[in-house]
Length: 87
Image (cartoon, rainbow, N blue to C red; front, side, top):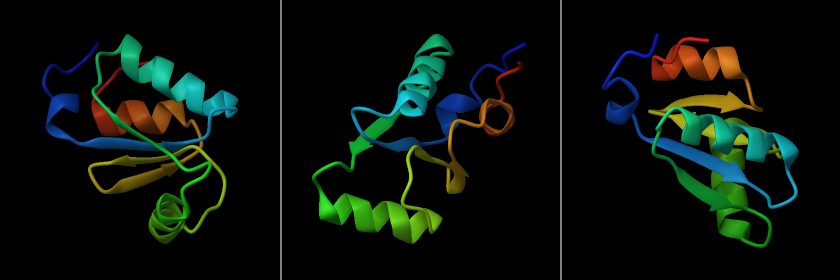
């Protein structure tokens, strides 16, 4: 069961590349649950790459920032917990 309003109060940013399968899965998940997010494609943008690495310590995508909590990869259970979305 979705907790109404929980996801809307947290900003969600996803660092992606166009060819990342798990990035597409994460964006589909957000769309299915009505979660607004900001996408930052790091493919050709060194400043965004540095921003992502500084936040996560990782060079792989997706890196997802949910209200300051960093999730590396498409970890659906963790995202659901942070966003108040039931599995």
